[in-house]
Image 1 (cartoon, protein in one colour):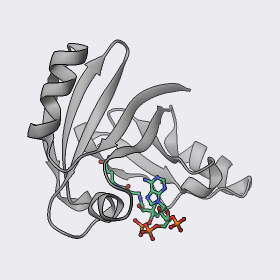
Image 2 (tube, protein in one colour):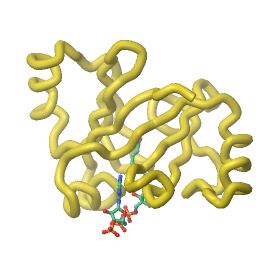
Image 3 (cartoon, rainbow, N blue to C red):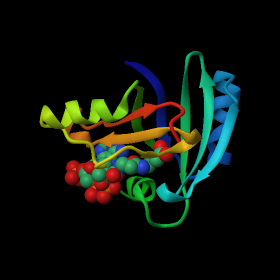
Length: 133
Ligand code: CMX
């Protein structure tokens, strides 16, 4: 598996971008709203992986709750997989069921699922399969 992207929870994408641009030379290559997740997302290409800045839309949703509890910071690490359904079945058999019962549409039109942070030493893990939506 390769790391597809690293999700960072921020209060405001606009306020966060200058650091990434000035300090690291990273600029957004894609932006979208993911209403089902109640977030705005901006992807910054960083070599073969990317940084996903996540800004909550409204007071509800996983990212809004995260910010309220823990403040801005590392939200999740996403791994790219082939055959996400097969991976979910394998993980469930191994006692680590995904939070979703089936892959669901995520940002950039990909199929995604999440694994609870309790399985990965406190890190929320996302699996991403490209191009299946
Ligand atoms: N990373 C690590 N720990 C996290 C976490 C995260 N991203 N989100 C919550 N937690 C921790 C909380 O700090 C809390 O820990 P304690 O019990 O020690 O206090 C515990 O998990 C439960 O917290 P909670 O407030 O009940 O959190 P939620 O109700 O949000 O549930 C989770 C947590 C992981 C099940 C939920 O966030 C979820 O379903 N996430 C998957 C979907 C998602 O994150 N979507 C946003 C990204 C979308 C995108 O990238 O497009």
